[in-house]
Image (cartoon, rainbow, N blue to C red; front, side, top):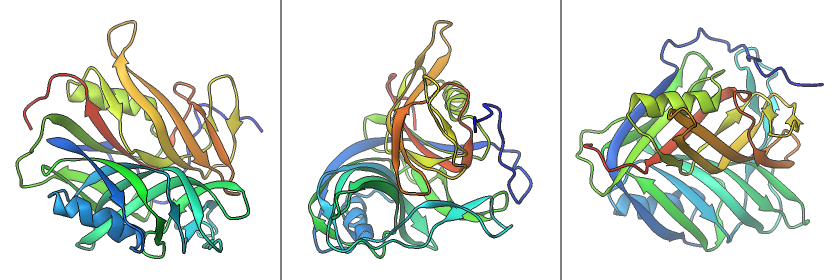
Length: 295
């Protein structure tokens, strides 16, 4: 089967008129270690909250998780959802983390996170998927880099278009603090990710930016060179993403991603332009590389 580059995945609810939402603020980059013995959620939350950050995007590398619980993307058997999750997988022993991206915010008033990662399980298999933060424990120290601003809030809200509870960015009633201009965004279903990022940067007057710790899902994936992943449900993390002026001077997005399919197999590559619509959601943190603006 070959993918239609103009494909759209029908969602259970009506399309929201706002196809992306953003929040902006001056912020900072923070490096720390996820400490062994803590749940994955606590290991992420404690250093961020101590630094005054209640919302952030993170990139993690190295270390291990165990006990470890995760799910894979799956087709939905319930008409209330266009795509869903698999049963929970719990590999015995410690799984070695290769890399992962995390969105950190709040759900029901408490700290929460959304993580897609790649790892090697004790049987030697390289797999990927969605980490369950309350049921997973840090077994060996994991290096983390976070980007966040006190002026940005990220909270889980019910989403009528998809019937999921999803992270959305919003302005926080706090001044930004730091020397880095950050822009958090949520892109809705069926929007080609590169076109959405370019529109967001135009709207905010950003000429150059780098994606940090961004996660989401695509309804099938088309890579440069014609390689495809035809599974409708995929879990994605951006491994390298930039927005920069194209030949015409307008913002042009360029993304390299890693993703897990419903079998947990990992696929990696540079995305073909205009061919990768969002499945359920895409959570983005953009670090502007222009002169910092006013938060």
